Image 1 (cartoon, helix red, strand yellow):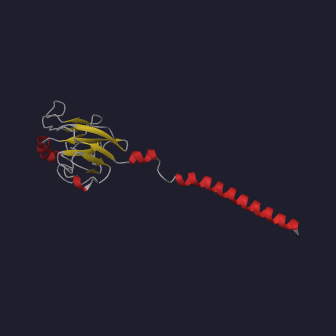
Image 2 (cartoon, rainbow, N blue to C red):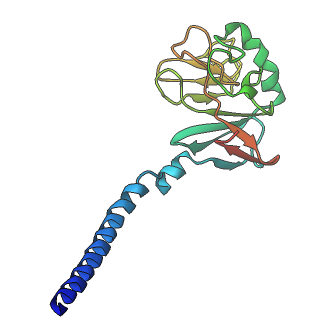
Image 3 (cartoon, one colour):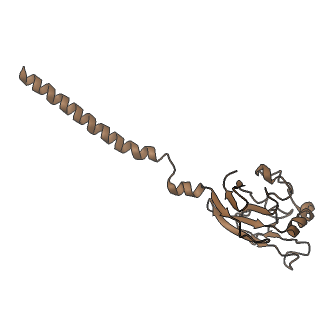
Length: 193
């Protein structure tokens, strides 16, 4: 009888030991598997919002930041630039940004929250090239009616200083306005509305 008691205690010990080892193995395998469902720090950074200091931005100046691996432009438009925007309306494909799905705050003539500060993804909506900033008036290569904007050298698409696409160019829609908000008069947050 004492032999059976020893055997039962050995069995119980082996059962507990193997259960504990098996549980540890399952936890060891499950932890990385479960962790794979959460984004990595690199992925979080790639999609994270970007804070921009616009206090040193001069009138007529454009700065470029990176958000989600794309260039984002922040332009401080002058009163003269803003006054010329309506002149382009008859030559634009979508002057009020109705066709493309843009944030509600860009369904206006300036396509911005604050008229003087304009924020847009700096990627042409045709094939993804990056247009050049051409704020000059009537340059020889863009014509006498050019009042400033963006020109895509890849295929000739043109956008005005509100990122609205001209008629008859390869780009199908206006430049994309990312979600953004103002944290203060000098701080802008790109990536959150």
